[in-house]
Length: 174
Image 1: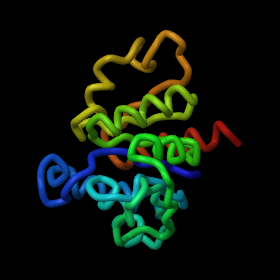
Image 2 (image 1 turned 180 degrees about the vertical axis):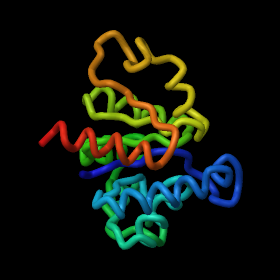
Image 3 (image 1 turned 90 degrees about the horizontal axis):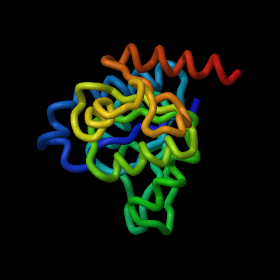
């Protein structure tokens, strides 16, 4: 499956990214080991760490980049768009079968909302902070972002649980 990972941008050596660095690398490794192609925004922060994990495990990671960005050193493929950070997220979400949210600020929130509007499965990796944890607190019936109930928003507490949920989603679409 094509799995988008969205989350915090920023230096991998500063909070809040530093706190979840190992989680992100392990997520990337697990996704690659399980045969998924990983899509991300291709820049720093969560994107860089997940990309590093994917590459260390021999997987493929695609960066969907905003205009004038070259992306992080771990990307297997760069899709250079003529769009800003937010608009390029449309390409990222549309290219993915499932979205995993890790921490994040407003850009991550926009990506999660885009995915929900497009009825793409979303997994919130809880305990990673930011909008990922905030979304988990406001879900209707503990699984929807609004009354349209486009798609269930799923919650995972570990990388292993995230991988299991992605596998379950993959089996449902076959």
